[in-house]
Image (cartoon, rainbow, N blue to C red):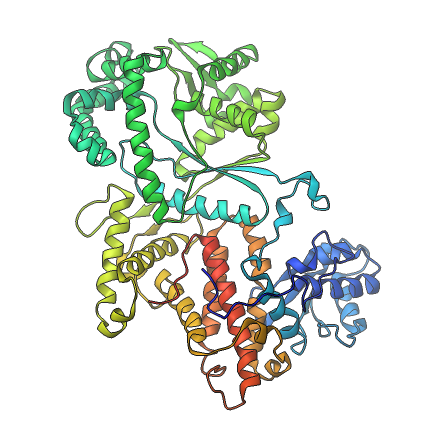
Amino acid sequence: MDSQVTDATTDAAGTVPCHRPTNSSSPPCLNPVDRFREIISEQVARILGTDAKLVFAGLDRTSTLDKGDLLLAIPRLRLMGVPHAELAAKVAAEFKPVQGARVEVPTADGQFLRFFFDASELPSTLLPFILQQRDGYGFDPQHGRREPSNPEAGAKTIIVEFSSPNIAKKFHAGHLRSTIIGGFLSNLYQRSGYNVIRMNYLGDWGRQYGLLACGWERYGDEAAFTKDPIHHLFDIYVKISADFEPEEEAFKAATKRGEDTSELESLGLLGEAKAYFKRMEDGDQDALQLWQRFRSLSIEKYQETYGQLNIHFDVYSGESQVKRETMETAETVLRDRHITEFKDGAWLVDFSKHGAKALQVAIARNRNETSNYLLRDIGAAIQRYNEYHFDEMIYVVMAEQETHLQRLFKILSLMGGDYESFSKSMKHVSYGKVKGMSTRKETVKFLDDILADVGDFMHSLMRRNEDKYNQVIDPQRTAELLGISAIMVQDMSGKRVNGYEFDLDRMTSFEGDTGPYLQYAHVRLSSIFQKVDISRDEMLAADFSVLPNSPHAIKLLRIIAQFPDVVKQALTTLEPTTILTYLFKLTQQLSSSYEHLKVLNPSEGRVVSVARAALYEAARQTLHNGMLLLGLTPLNRM
């Protein structure tokens, strides 16, 4: 989204000098607070006789502004022999503020030092910088470099595997969470300078697909399939699954009794499904042609739906894309290293023999010699490393899959060599369940159902205010974006590991920490510049010395200044709520500031109006950047 202010060309260096600090690996031009860190670290290092780089790295943002702007825990400096509280008191006593130093004398609090920014210096340090950085504010693209000090070394490559629905099965709440979280992580890494490969690993292979093919022979309808492939395949899967249920129950009961199930596996629908899948693995062209149709049309439909969420994928992979040769090579290593053993007609891994008793026993090759989910995942990981040479690979998968992924990582580690090396760079980003996820009409089947239902609900809310509704240029699209924001913000509000209740009424409210409220906050900021004629050049040349007179302005500035540190923290937590919590903190401060910091015809005159406009534009830009990072589309009007 373009800024609401009049655009003007400015020099990249412009009014904001950008010098590399002597004690950090990141230029301060990427984070204006690093200028404060540099001043603090040089003085603390001088007073305590320690390394300024250690001090710089140890200066963290505070949780609340009453505790300061930056906090230094003395134990992080690894100084021995003197009580940490004494060292903190020594720094507080000997710290000497100088003209233009931007930092007040710190407060010692036990073994901590609390630093407050000099209010008189903050506006001129921060505002011109943000006005020039625009969409770049908050992000450090050097984080993803192989060598931060050497741009020629290139970026690290990270694969983010997320969403990954099963063709013909419903796009359930777990897939939605994976899609939202994976989209956020992809944005976060990309804005931090990584080469990001967004991968959708479709469930498009295996016995379940063989069952679907059997269902197609019984219930398939070409016209219905052409009109809506995903819904029709799902309808088929529901019907064939109902047909299969008695067999499945008998199979489970026999397994529980410890009986030989080989005969059951060869009979009825289970036998048909396994036989069909065997044809596919053996390269039967008729079987593969039908599979390719199902897969291609499903991907086309998925792409349309993902587009509504600002989600795209670089690769639509899937279990079907794992090559037989790759799996066979892996199996050779597994057997040669005595990781797998042959028992009851199948190849399996007994993890108790490999120092991981909790992982129990897992089958790596089925009795009828077809591959299974675990073996295909082993092959997929190997293929990805061979093709992309990734530095890191993240699986955004629900917590229920933790054991499966631990088995995968452990097996690759046991394989030794390159397999062991890249297994150490694989990570599971898990999340909890969503409860009560249904539309007003029926239990949810597809992501389209969820988006349409919430969008319709937002549209009905908008219609309640006819005057405002008539001013919206595209109310249908606005309602859709509000609905998407509602869904995504509710999902990101808590920590990933926590489940939550899907609550349509709460998520669509314009009050509280919701998606619609976040959009309202951005619209309100944008509306300021629809009412005043102030250019970006004027704001860059503003007299910022008038702002420190207002406590509301300074508090807002101090929150805005935290954004780059919040983004950096999110790279550690991998939690969308890290960003979201900060944005609500920003919007709450904005809400309490409007009455005290008017831009339109303030009694103090145009000089103050221009300075306040610059402050609000910096806040809008920060909110805008944070929303885009989360995957939201900021609205200008609603």
